[in-house]
Length: 217
Length: 217
Image (cartoon, rainbow over all chains, first blue to last red; front, top):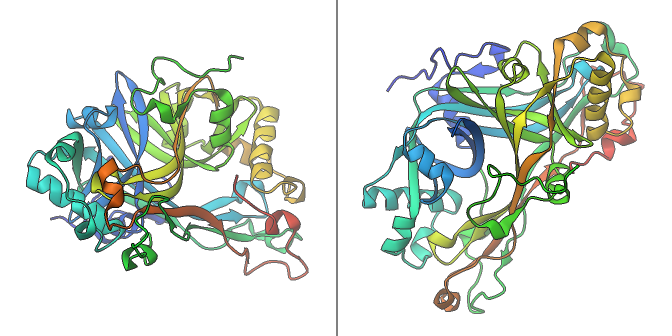
């Protein structure tokens, strides 16, 4: 398994000092999130679909209804781009031009493999539930064959990818630092709120640890 | 200006009860966010680039370095898809199959117009700064011609789009509601943190209201 995910198509052309083509850097960004945007072409038109993802070893997994456009197009072998983005802050500089964003992102290129084997499919879906809330899978009503059939699971080998990130304060033109203009970073982060029980929850049911302890990344 | 943004390509095929093709619904989702994912094709390969966006009237605006791949490809008239996604919560159901996500998203199709007129370009860039922090533009070091030249500004007419959203508690199979399984929603939201001043800030500079009052959407 090569450590570098760099290819001519994923080589960062601009601001390459912000880039990382190593497997560790890419996995670090992937493992910090849960939602991606998948790009593919259907009848000549690019589409970008938001969806959940999770990493299992050296593959990035997504799923969806077997009937959905995204699953059908990707299962047919379409070229795809999966992009994961975490926005960490707004960088307010002393000139409009140097305003920026602190972020971590990954762009992964490739074609998906439609997972056909039923046991592998179930194991991957278990991986999603356990990624979100470790320990939850075993508590659920068991899945049915029909549910597994209705779910399309797609796996992307993580072979061709790049990570890109920026952090830190604004970088201004040297003479501008002395100006009486506020500059700095306004942090942004995803916040996990207080769980809201289903109105029809069985009243004997307490909130389990896998819900109170839920975090992203 | 037609109120409906529905075309054959943006007609929602699945779960259309979650959809909205009206201008108000689409603008509501757009105006709640600041970051989008732009899909386009370059040399046969789809790419999905994360970037800031803002709405000016009936156009969605993005910008980037004039030298960037995204700006060059879109300026040449490539078909594009701009997707905006807000994740509002994880929906934990009693079966793996009915797990879901509460979200609001917009998918906008079209080709970008490269803004060439210098005054329009400046007005649009002012729109971004003012979208993020109303009142900030007037406080900044004035822009230079070179900075305006180095920035590519692209405008998408909002003519062909759909919004899609889900909210509320899990929807489970009727017999499952009685089971002793915790179900509900774990809310997710973007949190704005405490501004961190640039280490080189002029010490006479206080934090202005447009920074302390900054919100997204």
